Image (cartoon, rainbow, N blue to C red):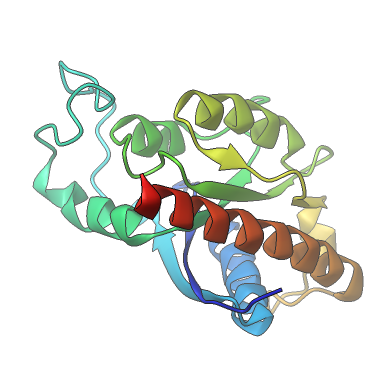
Length: 195
């Protein structure tokens, strides 16, 4: 596979106090850097202004609605990405409200792009959030790759320094996902350019 470098945004989907998401995001960003096919940008939604009140006209109809000034950097970085890895926990059998707000404030930023997932939580390892997100991104004409990474009972899998106690299996899952993500991102980028 060609190692043409793809602009990859790793999105930290939780803004909860003392969240574990940044630890997981650092891990997958490191895996993506080692992969060699990506330029990696870690986007922490806690750094953006994400009001739940949405614009009157959906971004699908008006791609550039008036957005809060505190969202400008997020929008610019989402625009620049050719692919995404969304890092999400399960909240009440779904994904965080801040992540939904970030998604709903945008449309063209997701349209025709490839998306992978890394989930973490107690028993489910984020799989409930990932399945819900697949439906949302399908509506936005994004392509979610089949492979994913999941960390059930993440608090047992990472040590106090944020390092995996047994890294080989998760690294293998990450490589499989990143290979698919790179292939789809390259194909979709070429298709968007040709359109």
